[in-house]
Length: 188
Image (cartoon, rainbow, N blue to C red; front, side, top):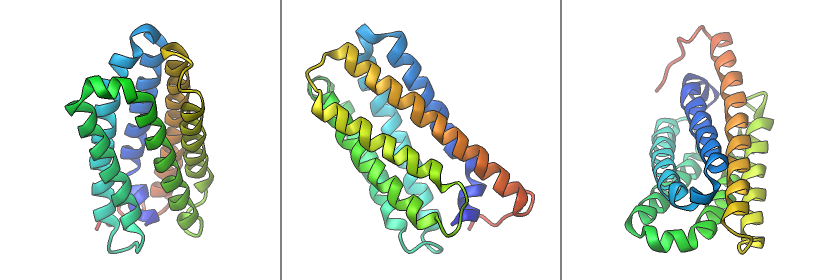
């Protein structure tokens, strides 16, 4: 699984960049963040779900817990589709959608990191991103009525930190890929 993750470090980096861009939008446009965020969130979660499912199926022969990634990907696609089908309802329930997604995704990332601790150094970054997801999700559930601006800042701060943590993880995976064979590891 480590070799597969190292070979696909660029997808982890892309997830990080997209999260950072989302965070910047949340801070730059706090008065419009709910509408903008519904669109960005739906697109991000949908695409992230697709990439996570691809990674799950790619790793299924080498990882008996591939189904955890599959569940995370399916959840992302379902939430993304629901966001596009009912944007008005999503706008009203947006904070709770994000909170639920953050908590479940965070728990699944912590599980994946614990499973990887035998194979990878630096799994701490995946654990930290999972914990950050859970904490941000809980904050959104505890303080849903604080207004769009505060919600936008919470979401923006989470996205920026999560993106940075993913970029650090991608950087470490890239280094591992180079150490493990100069980028010639098998991808099957």
